[in-house]
Length: 171
Image (cartoon, helix red, strand yellow):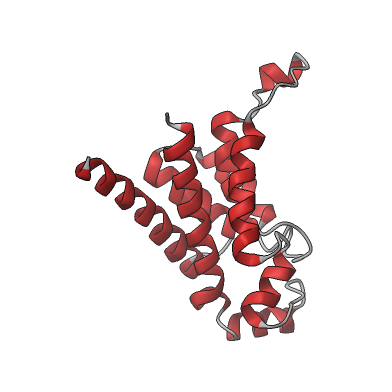
């Protein structure tokens, strides 16, 4: 039992650490979360990671949409239990993805109070940013966006997502 728990904890920590590292070094929070999960659990694909890029910075760097890290975690869960194209094409409406995605959503809300990128910025930085404005983006970076702010969010989301996958989806 101790060995299994150790392995579980190692996976949780690895996902966290990779997502943190990638966000600090490379940016694109959804890609960082998805890459960490793919490298930790072999879930996902390079195509999914590529497709997630536009979701960074609250969608197209707008900061107005869902936090990209959360979007990446939700995509990872959907890649396992989301409705397939075959089921979608057949009009199938039974979907269990929501019972698992809601767990991640709830953890995120509990931690940050909102899923909106701008609201997460307000909590972390004490202000919001227009990431599409060059000067605002420079201030975002100057205040530690990719030093300790966004990497922490990405790390937590990757850890929570792997926890949901290991504890709920891999039974």
